[in-house]
Image (cartoon, rainbow, N blue to C red):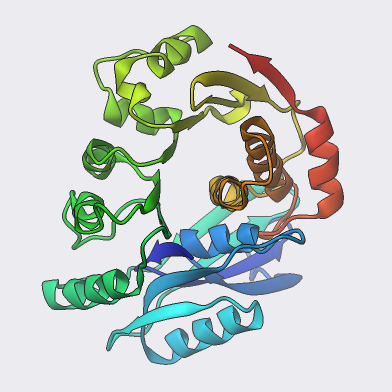
Length: 312
């Protein structure tokens, strides 16, 4: 079982407009609502293509919006482990101007995660995880969680052969790294949080880091570089993957789709490591070709054929 950790969910409402302006009322020509939060985007990737893996999302919901988010998740057959809260779940609105390709994200504040609620959420999480399961932390820790929250979970589950995927930043990343997770997937800026004494300007700088003792402790260490592609240490081999430029529409959630592809195919174990990374890159790139958080199989197939791989 894969456990996706999402204490701070939202109903993601994406509105497509043309020539967004403050001079007159703006009328969207298409609106879609999704169960949102980074883990939900990861789940959408997990469910794509024929083969799938069992998973659940651990989340905190409340009020009418919480009931609606649960309904949205049910439509996509997403299993939820819910901790209740006496506050209405938030909305996040993403306005997309399809003429200018500008995006205006408007994210509501969430509930206060007090110690009592955090303890309730953590207890439910730990009671659900079984030996040999997989735990995925994606995104920044919610306000109210200590910097070492992930590390605490790692310590609580020590000795149970739990596989950890970490995609976070700042002090949370530094603390989680100490627990030697199986997979770290971060971007180039987040890498500076982990090793602030290093400078990264050229591809060679990343190669030197991935060959260092710091990276050696992590079997799969992946750094996304935006338009420059992805550089990764997959066990003992380092690769650089690059996709020729595409006409991006909406980059929101592309990192989550990357993580979803990575988690799915490493869990299935049906592909070689480099092919798993190709899947993750193709998922991420296919997502940016759409206005909404979704993918098309034809795009994935085409992108996979265009990926340039360099063994370093």
